[in-house]
Image (tube, one colour):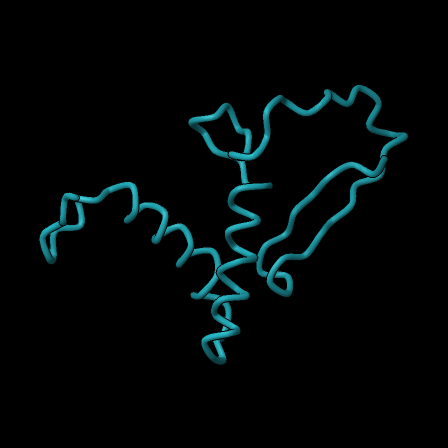
Length: 97
C-alpha cells in the first residue's frame, strides 16, 4: 500500500480529479442537511457520473456504456426527454422511444 504525503495533491491525481468533479457538480450547488442526505447526494452523483456523464477518454461514452448510442437521422419525429438529477442541479437528456 502506497500512502500519499499530506498537502501533496499531485501524488494522487486521479482521486483529486474525481473529488473536484463531484464538488463542482453537486455539493457546491446543494445544501447538505446531514450524513444520510450527503450519502444520497453522493449516490446520485455516482450514478450520473458512471451511467450518463460523457467521458473524453472513452469517446464521449459513460463508463457503464459498452457501445455508442444509435445515430438519429430524423430529428423531427423524435421528442427529447429531460431527467432532473439532484433536484435539477444536473439534467440528463435522452430521446423518447
